[in-house]
Image (cartoon, rainbow, N blue to C red):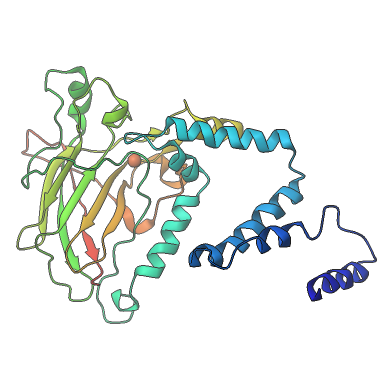
Length: 316
Ligand SMILES: [Fe+2]
């Protein structure tokens, strides 16, 4: 009752103008939550409902427009499977995955992990997982290649100028010491901008591999200098970009998941600092600490480029 009186008072303050839509509707929906609701949902649903309903009221959302949104989510779901996550991509182009990644990393990273005047390195920032990750990439020895496409294939001929040697160290933010036995799960798109599951012309798991750091925390692998790619245009995410008159490209990057016992796992990407799309990533995932410059490599017939990608993990 007090809330209703409050609204009446507010209406009086605004010159007696009645709300355009049912002023009690959202409160009634929130009040429908039962006493045995899941605790986290009980905490967050009032906020979600208020924002969602306020959005609909603010833009005067029609039934026809709401149904376009329902169809879009349904289509995203139908396109998604273990090889493609269209719903995640839709979320990515809206900036939501980058935002929740920032929120999650700020919740997880300990205040001890750097920036405290101790001179210790900052934890490597996380960034989005993206929709093209696959579990169970092959486990490979350090120094080996994640390219499985045959050398006489057209794909490999296109890739040859981009052959690269990528190496680095995994260290602890707290101690600065190397992290031995850390696992690095690595994946990237090919020179045609396609991940292997998008490309029928390359073998399964091409450009994917898992590596383990040695006693000095070091790893090394052979792959490609990455290529910028547009997100696929054959689904709701791509169509939405077109309707918004937005460019679809992601700057060239290599994905990593770095995990080690006793440390927070890290999902991140290293971006080619010389890529022209660095400043307009269509999923808003670039962070300046994650830029890496590829150097020309000499004396190595299997790599024209090299890059150092180091990772600092937070203990915990
Ligand atoms: Fe990617």
